[in-house]
Length: 291
Image 1 (cartoon, rainbow, N blue to C red):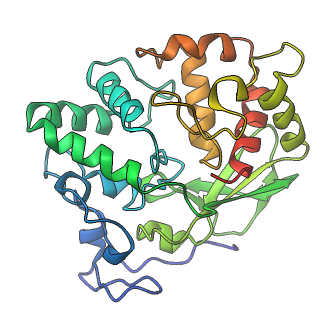
Image 2: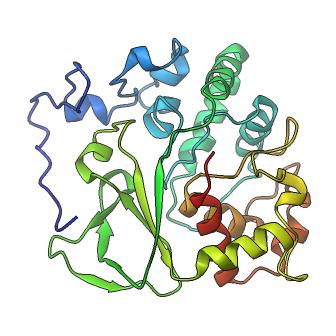
């Protein structure tokens, strides 16, 4: 992954992704609607998943993708319980789910939930049931322990882009999650995933924290999320095999109180003693597991 391949500019020319017979321009891909490259690969999409409303909100599929797998900037929501997603919807709408990172784009979710709440409630229900029906993802994220990683810079749509120089730098106490193929992710290709570089040793340390709480340093994740970490009941979500950047962000938001919705109190004892290193290790290990 040396350097950043040039993306065709928005000159009205059609773009393509491997395996799809669709042709979409950059303007269409980055509009309020979703880029549905493989419409036969998923159930019929409700209107809010495929179509946004210009000037008001983006469609669900434009950020979370039509398969719900999402990206480091937009959570993977495929297979999540409907009741859990509905509660998050309410928390966003009521200002109870914020972010600790000021420049994050969570205002898109807040705006979407407000607009949809003012419209037909069935629009929300249809979208939640659609994403729940998609089930677990195929392997979407490769986790690689490394000491040095590609130097990155901010790219379009919140994607981390490899520096054009191809330079590398020490990973430090970070997770660097980048597209396997930058251009395909930029085009919202739902078949092109991500690679997450994590510090050496983080998977072993993360496993101890997740399975046992590491001797009282935390609460074991398996106690609530299940021994397979695929969730329990209608309100405790699956957490295995999802973006480590997105997972780490949520752990930090719980710890700072930025996320303080209805069920957030259940997470406080689990996160209050976590260090930044713990959050990196837990997020790395969880991402390495199958959904």
